[in-house]
Image 1 (cartoon, one colour):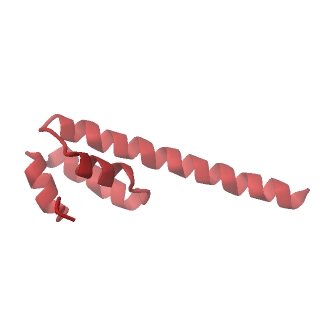
Image 2 (image 1 turned 45 degrees about the horizontal axis):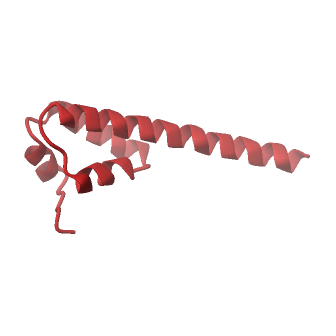
Length: 81
């Protein structure tokens, strides 16, 4: 019984972190949409990121960026990859 309770708590924590990451990624997308059109590959790159630290840095950058191109350059995003 203890093992099941432990497994459920780990699973719930994982879901919570996953939800936070998805919400942060969506916020980044919203900020970037205010300055330009986001390519599908950039959108995918942001939405597939799960590291909250990385997402936090991207969010701060997106809030200050003057353009999509400047954002891509700042994160060294290469659309040919």
